[in-house]
Length: 213
Image (cartoon, rainbow, N blue to C red; front, side, top):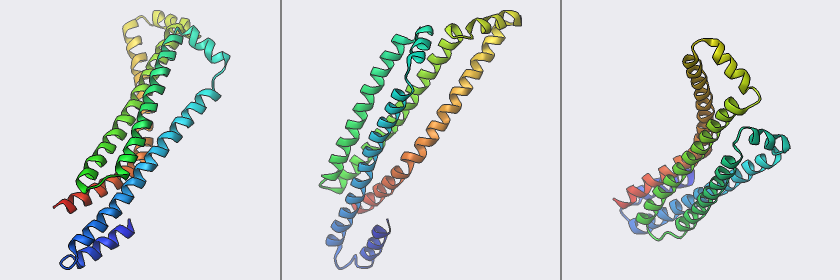
């Protein structure tokens, strides 16, 4: 960024003498930086995909399969996993295509449009991951409460409580709060992971808009 700031200062100081040359050179610097940022977004998405896939494989065992079967979630988990991996591969492909398109952009106007597209893709990617995790946690809580090892104990507590509606409302609120906390922390993680790069892209977008005027 320091290189870009210095060049902008130099460009402004000599704007009257070499406007076209300096404007084109400044655009090339912004293009190079934007391409590098989008490339890192692509690399991070692959690293994240590999990380979560590795966690899933390493933590998978017969006990987990038996618990999922006991909670009547086997088919649901399989369908959700197929959808999840298919969409994640789709997003990784989008990140790669965005990188290629930004790299070979021919004008500042096109680069502005493609930077906006990159930002939309990242936003959609983050919300999809949060949605999938939220659905998974909801299904997990439902399975544990109704079919898990402690389900009989939970239902007995509800019957002994005398106010079964209030009991189930409390259980639901606790589950939703727990899910909300997890999703909030994941959202915060994504804000840090992708937010820095998106902020730099936003700065590049702002500089390109100035070049257009």
